[in-house]
Image 1 (cartoon, rainbow, N blue to C red):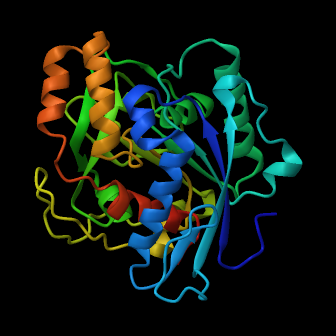
Image 2 (spheres, one colour; image 1 turned 135 degrees about the horizontal axis):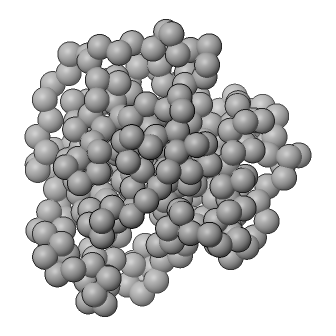
Length: 314
């Protein structure tokens, strides 16, 4: 069973790649980046209360006080063929996060095929475990559950990107639109989404910017009309505060985004520089991403609290 402590969440992080060069030197590895993102977004969700990772607690004005919420992360380096958690260990987790990767989710290689099988197994047999997919993880979940990931005609989507939300996306994110960091040229086409999944948003490059699957008993209760929300300014830096619909969010079993809510400018910039210099990303795309690198990022203040709310943090 998930951790019984009322204010504790146990998470498995399925690590699908590694940072290199300046990106690694300035940000650490995937686990470091996710710990900071999850801690900061937990703070954003509970701004007047304490919230922390057990491995990286926040400082408090009262050194003797205990954080309201804590979490632990168990990383699994699946891209290095580290075994994934088996059934007994799976029961320890409240949620499983599948990270991004430089690999392609459609590649026919052992570690990716094993991850696809694992993802389907968790979704089918452990419905109480929330599944979260980020970029490559979004694509893996689609492939595992009956959708398809394909190359997007060689077109990169990079940097802080305004995402137009569907009516359901507005309900879930609690804002009118969001900006997320992007770094991909594969995608899950809108007409190849897995059964029972609904799209959350789109851009001009990728029509599927995220998906959710609700628990079957909840589907008929999900509102479809767009809520009344203040409009967003896509290229500014002012922080958005989402209006979270907790009863709706907790009906979600699986949540994915094509973007990278865990990234920020100091992750993006060296990565774009490295990939632009090597020719992996074409020069016009890299230059455009650098021009937008200081645009507002809704990862910590918007997407992060949504993830925590799906995991049951109130």
